[in-house]
Length: 231
Image 1 (cartoon, rainbow, N blue to C red):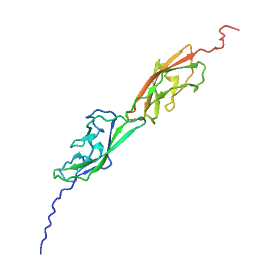
Image 2: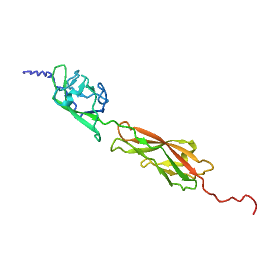
Image 3: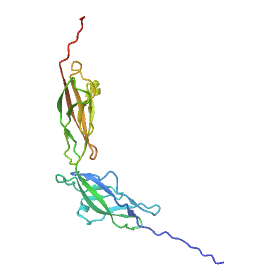
Image 4: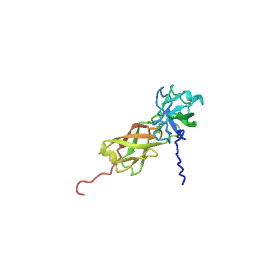
């Protein structure tokens, strides 16, 4: 009986850079700023191996604007440029390769590094609205005005605080429109001035917020006489 012994030997396999990765940094960020919150990633199927990453020089003009550490952390080598008016993002494609201790390089893999427009805070306009004390529940008092210099962003409105706090039950602020409406019966003699701190939040990176004081003045209205003695 002939015994055949087959010995399998390990052949080092090239690491690979994970496909489809993107990282972003805000326009005009200073040199040395990290691009993205997490490093770019690579994988190595060989046990005990840890892949190191590097940018493939000269593959695009962007390859000189960014640097990458062996662990995949991307940083700016110079200040990020300012974007043009109306420009929300400027994606740059770079080629990344991974190497392990066997000096086996991965095939180059594209990664997208994005210069993103700075997300500015919304600006809320402080206003004063008048409402008669006999206003019906759900009557429109006024609409909070707010703007955002970042094009295309949606704003959400919140009533952040009431002064006095007891006025919280008297008015509502619509999250989508900023409309202020009467929510309960008003009385000039009891409370004639209410201040609502209205907050507008955008849907951009970081959900930036802006606030302003909205003053509501309840106006006095003629009331029918009240008979207090015998007829």
